Image 1 (cartoon, rainbow, N blue to C red):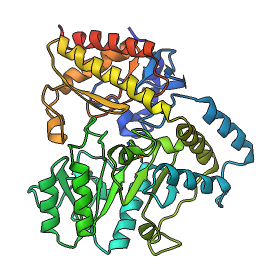
Image 2 (image 1 turned 45 degrees about the horizontal axis):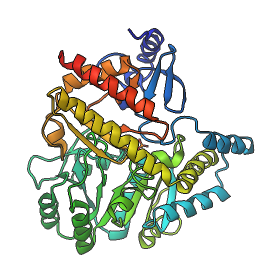
Image 3 (image 1 turned 90 degrees about the vertical axis):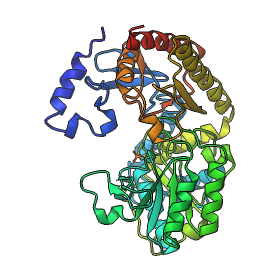
Length: 432
Ligand code: PMP
């Protein structure tokens, strides 16, 4: 048995102080039960919790730690920057260098603005798109997450062509009216929304590969068709690459699929573990942003010197070591293919979706191409699997509807450890 005594005690202390005891809902073990594990330290692939238990990390802070934890190259950069003050609120050389590097790695980004989170990046990107087009509405896909901006916390309306409904208390109907939603991978639904709202759609935003309903890949030709539709109708195509940026390829999903987005939002890896986001894209759109243009957006800590030190170090390392992506592809393929094979051996035939170093084991034997499909999963069995894996030292996201993120610190030996735990845990979860 895992000894989680200190974690449980800390969670008990946190609950009267912090809503739900956590500073972000995804950290709570709401859907799998039990107390969240409080972490103490991490190195490479390994996390150590406050009770001294060790786990191999497949969340990696929900994506940023692509090189594993505490990589020397990032620690050195932060250590070097540290004595020169933690913030100026004035421009620095590193911000210019970072903008140059981002543009080099993601060529569709002609101009870029640094912010402090993926949420800010996505909120700001749609404001810029609205300012640029003079239109109000946006299209998003059910099950794609773009941070907690009001415009994104919208569920599908009652009919295919009706405006969305607030998906969170505190979001107004007024806001919901301007967000149209379609099922992922459903091109006719997007075409119908555009036809029903002629000349009114400012932007279409999506995760080009979805990580937020579990891992869901775009169907063949889907991204190309969206690109063509947006061009035809003057709609700003926004790729939310907060998860996929610098992960699926040095230039993100748009490099992998050969598509040029009008705007891109970034986060996670770009900060190396410190709070950073970015949005950028076509120069004519980005020229709308203040102080160059009339779309207001600002930030006291934007381009923060610690965050740019960590982010630059990690990005530069990735840029200079493209072979890391080949290695990540190989280890991730072994993990995902092995998982699929184990489930098949056990007669479960579960669906495993993978793109690059992101993958999900869905507790259903049906294909998963959108949110409806994902919802068919046996989440109770997933919960049992999650705890069985945790007890075997494998740290997964505590929800069926998340992807695993593989870091470069996952060695062949750790792949084997994961696969052994996977087999035992699937057996345990299903009483086989
Ligand atoms: N977009 C995507 C695709 C995300 O996965 C996330 C966070 N998981 C966000 C935006 C929001 O980023 P943040 O949590 O940094 O605000």
